[in-house]
Length: 238
Image 1: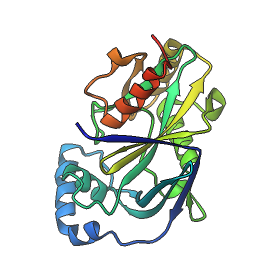
Image 2: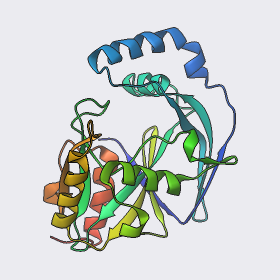
Image 3: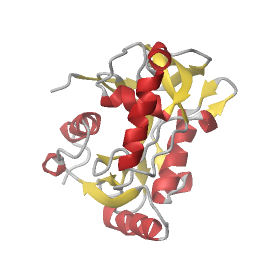
């Protein structure tokens, strides 16, 4: 099992600056061929510009890192090939939506996505739309992804003051608990109605998780590790 380390922080210092990623430069032809193959399998994949991180540091309640621009094809190949270059990491925010009765709300990724069938909190790889000046605004990224995937806006929940940074291999998932005023079943119906109104929603369905027994192999390790800490602390309970 992948080793997991979780750091709780209250501030983020994420700078965006130009950098040529050696992996993306040296494996350009292989990456292009790999992405073409993946596109044949899933025609909806799009090779947009995204942000990855490097030089991650946790110190005195702060997470700091430098982010750089690359393309989704490079990220996908790097992931599919087992993260061969550890000079970079995939650092992304996740909105850990929690209902008023203690259920965490996860979405099942649609069949047309690169992570089909997996269960995640609302999230998305940071991109240039999340940059303010030379700083990555991860709070804005999470709010945008939550709204796109669930239809919920910041008026529908209270965002925690801290982030739980779940480090697993070459990934750092920055979890922010979002406490909603509605019950899990109400949120589930509301999100499902939002999905039904879309032509090609990113999510295929909604799953409520209330206790350890609800954890499944469809959840990435960074999701189950975070949820295990919540359940161990007695929040939430079934």
